[in-house]
Length: 278
Length: 341
Image 1: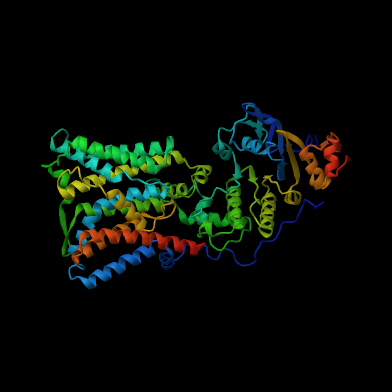
Image 2: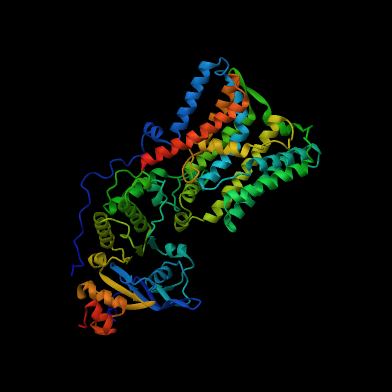
């Protein structure tokens, strides 16, 4: 594997297994996220990438295998414990409260209280400070929104996505995981979200990006983790392969050999896909 | 293939993005608040009745209106909390009636000192709320079904325990909140103050504490709330329990107002409380509204009842007009929401 001489992965998994009765959702999967990179996770429907991501974000507990965060072995007993370790997830349905304003959403579940008796006895929220800090986080990512006191439901899809991303980045200390962040967006808004992901990466925050959109993956990812049949089929650099080849790896027509070249694994499928071994 | 390294991109817009960072001005907030419509309706009704009847615009009459609505108003606070979580409570009136009979009998028969009887009433009503919350959250069952069942349970228990008898000869502390004190040119009951204080307390809790934000988030989307680390199960059960305790306080207010423990009391109060909540601009789908809106809603009902009474309109027409008002309020709410989209 080409990652052997690389720096310590931020988030790493070895031999993860998860079975539901006779169904094996994760079948000895490995995973490596390097510091400061955008790692795209792609795979066919049913390849098990959702299960993999759930295991890495604490939403499911694997039956076997090891997860390391910053080199240290770790077990998550729920999404909260992954969050407590600085892993934030942007969910596909965004998990925002529509009628609440942007600042309230940024601090939902982690509200700040006023100092002193007002906060400790009267439990009074520090709305001003939350607004200011929310504004800082938004400015940090150069997200231009006119008012942080407008309800999230008044925002466009791209703006909502931006709020969800800003919230995740604000709280993440080690990793941000984004599940299909451009799936529901138009061309222009997708472009803005991809810009946003780049800015998150440029801040030094590694990003795991789950996506079906191959052009987006090729535009933004530093490396691509191809998931197939419950395990990692390959990790490649987008500059080394064409989209057709990556799709072929995803569907099993091509396989990646030790040297990083491809071999035809399924000649008929490869012929149908119009790809050949390098 | 596209290069993977891109220079840091420029901000999407050059215009100053954070110009509107400060909280909106009070005037702007008042104009855009969802309580503005109900408040305007209330003021219009007040103007109308002031012009059509002589007695309406007097301190004594306003004090009377508050007294008339304090029981339903207190129930409506609990109802608002539950509706904000996208639930509904049909059992509030019946639970209150049972609580009032428990308090009245325990105290009147001397089984418990008056204050202990009151405390027991609060615990019993809180217990009903807790049970509602557990059934809604843990099984889980739709709030409509749970509270419909609980409505019948509490109604039956009230009649069984009271043996259909009105409880009289209540000790002093039970009716203390019915006493009045002079304020300006009129007399105000302590019970009215309790209701107003409860409205203010819950308004504060909803708008200025994390708990309040979580209630709104829960009503918006339980899944989103959960994913943001809010313990939705505990929160839901807590909301129903708090509502139950409020029904217990309403039970005490009811006793103080009538001076007896009446097993027939409160039978339409569940619907009246929902009416007040809806008139106050709170959405039945959860996540939008406020207890201050409900306070206005309660006053709208009270003012219409009182004003029509002063005009000599038969009480059945008051009910009719209340019904029309509810449909009107929801219609306005729907139309304004469509426009906002």
